[in-house]
Image: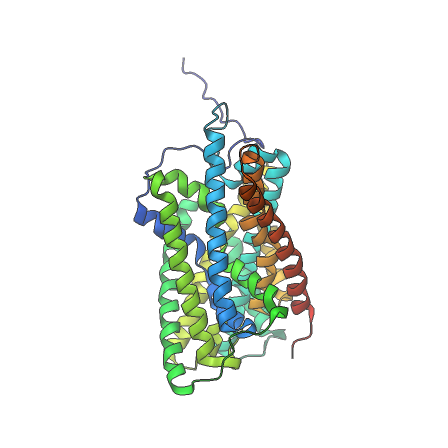
Length: 414
């Protein structure tokens, strides 16, 4: 008589979010590429506008400063996990940021990570819809369609299709969309930078290097948004073939991304000066190539939406549905994201809000806090001050940046 097949137990709060499956290990070039894919996204298109608001020198310093601190905090997560796993006795399966939070701080730690992941990922998707609606608005030059504002019309046009895409349960089926999105991203960035160089040669507008400290928190929020990807660092380290060289590979990846961000933002600003718009593609003149870039990026973000929302569904279904697939909850989240996108007029302002309110917590505060709690008994006063200093800096940036970004969003735009 055949044995009855045992059912896999439903996940609990202390169950690792990512199962401990055997996966092929990644070489250094693959790890480099994975970090690039995880971090670089649509946020880069708002950097030239941030350069305009803050000044080119100030924003360059922000980009390289945030890149260096983000790298440091990523490595704090790696060191913290390695320390805990060296203890054994149940600490051998820390596969995600949330798992680490649970081991260090219990339910509160996992809850803090989960909330920030939900808000950041949903925030990215709101940004995607704002970009898509603004780009299509520029392409078709319609102020209203069927009595609805053109931007609102395009968001609602995306809604039913996103319900279908977000109903797909398996990331395997969404993987080809991710590859397509990355190729389009890189191609569009290259085209926009070439266009910037051509425009700069013709116009050479006046630019400012430093716009004053009053705009500092705004710029930091935008830059933090573009560098968000710390949640993937532990899975990437788990899959790295050469763990000893992982830190160097991450450092090279962050340096390359920082240089690319700096070049893209600076070129966009010095090409258009005070006329730089919140999404740099809106500055590109009419023509087939411009239309192709805007349409391509819109399609890219349209298909990236379900990928970015997947971490949200993993957390929500884990907490409220016993880890089971829940269609109606996914649809509710898509509706919420669309409604928020309708209320936010400016892409770069929203980037600053998400970067300040959520990304700073994920990138700086929690990694430094977890590292401090695990290593506090063996740290010298310099390491102690550094961890505590990062936590305090993160809280100050989050509080001030969120207030400033909200004030920008709620103010009446000229």
